[in-house]
Image (cartoon, rainbow, N blue to C red; front, side, top):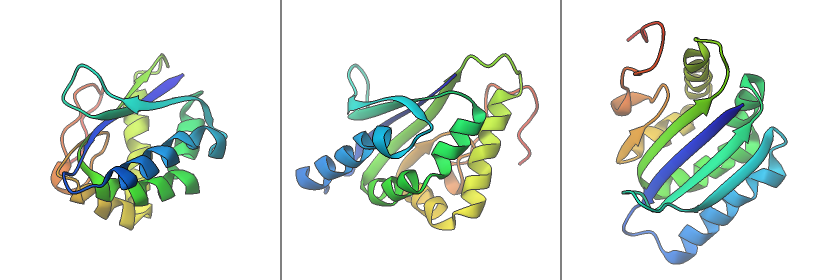
Length: 149
């Protein structure tokens, strides 16, 4: 099981209408993407972020299907231009010590194959996530093998 978690704040110029439309689109993922077994989207309490979401995925195949699904790509194209600060992380109960690297590989392939999404992610003020591209790229902390730079 993989819990894909995101937390974010929106840019100051974003209107309430834009914000609500993007959040509504995020909530529809549960209906639009079969790989998701459960999803929650809402305000983020107790931290420095405004909103968050958690998607539950059965395994790495479901995770890759989710990350590359047209509905997810469409949501990124609408939402990422509104985002100022973003963090993406995953929690998995998979006993494979390489699961973190495999998740990062899914993101790397996505960034390689969908350049407009890579550009949008690179344009976010602050972004932290698996295999983050461009100016946001960092060495992962919990992997069994080093991330090639």
